[in-house]
Length: 216
Image (cartoon, rainbow, N blue to C red):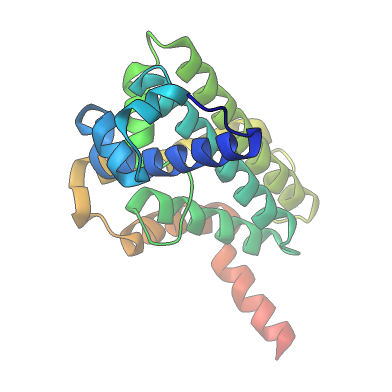
């Protein structure tokens, strides 16, 4: 077999990962197959096994890539927002789009998370990735919450760490609703539920009104 350059090998691996993301999220882990991923990537099944020993290894790599993208997207959304309310809304809308399968949203979608949650008990690598994902999301949420406390938007006695974990759990719950309702669960439903929860905590609806008054 002729040797290929490292750049070429990395490009093919990235192509396989992208195909894996598409097929796993469309079909779920159990119904996905190496042959379907190969077809999506425009490669042979043998080519897939050159880079990944098994479907599980490919899933783990694809899931890890999406978790990193999710972390980056949330970090950028929060970091570029000058107001707590806007930062919260951006993060909530991002999660809602992921949970409901909205177009243009990249991250650990519901089929990825469902399989990861279901197998974490006996898959140490997936468990560690889920723990890291939750820890990072909670850290970002805590940063926003602590900023809200400093601005007087939340009580000074607020348990920032506990509330951050609760917010992340609420957002992840949207993925479970998607599993229960399937395609009937829409982005609008996800956003309405998430915003209702966040508005009650941060008074973001009131903050939007006050911001408009200032702009006016």
